[in-house]
Image 1: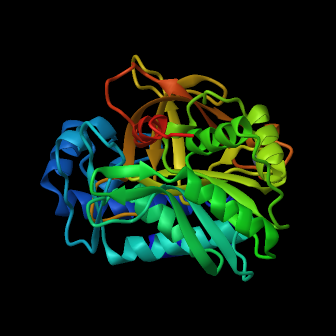
Image 2 (image 1 turned 180 degrees about the vertical axis):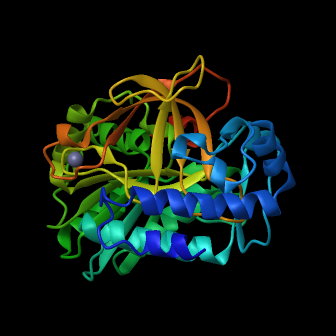
Length: 367
Ligand SMILES: [Zn+2]
């Protein structure tokens, strides 16, 4: 996996001149998959892509729908860890990662977090708007939330959802008590959680007329998963206003990112609040009818490509999301790579996302 190593060691995470290296790393990954995953080979054969030589562009890489991964377990050789996609109910996919994938993911995360000014040596307090890690919950969201609390040294970690013998319960009072204490201290506070969830906290604070001015350098980090970035109940402007009003945190200190287990690439919003595509991945928007690639600016199915992982055939996955890829030059932030806007889902389904599940728990909160 020489080319993968080279790709994930790129100096500039948004370098637009790495498409040849990217395609090479994809072919290298493809060669591994067809020799280590019988199911993948069958799919590739069915599409008449029999060797890496048949791949002329990223468009030609055989695509596996994420829905299929939820129903069938794919393996491609030995693995170090397994992650489960979010979904408190319904089907979940199991994705396997080998050591090399984890190292690549770590390199990518450090590079991107540094680029976006998120890595800090200044110790801070974390408030995680999600589940406290517990052996009964193995979802990647929990693991990611925990990993995020390592980006700056943690003085403390507080979780809004606590695991009790009745399952997860919100601990709103605990959070208010923590905010009262943190506001008087010097250490910045970092919030980490789903947007819908964080917004719910703002509303609760506002209703109770509880307003805080958190120490300088405090940040709100929004993430958790792909699905949470559909048109939210709250528009971004309202979100930023409420963050300022209830916690005293300015818009520039709100950092959004997302990733998905089936495509574990870290998309981090730029200062223009756009998710530019980093060098480690490629996104193809496809016509929902004939799956032909569409040009930038057109709405279609979102196909995500990355040679990050060997142990699962997630080289090119088709989501059931609708999105638009915009030209990078449309964004004033200076990053030239295109950026993705998620519009919604192809069809409403009964599958509950992790955030929706969490919002249900929060509805039971007593204030
Ligand atoms: Zn931008």
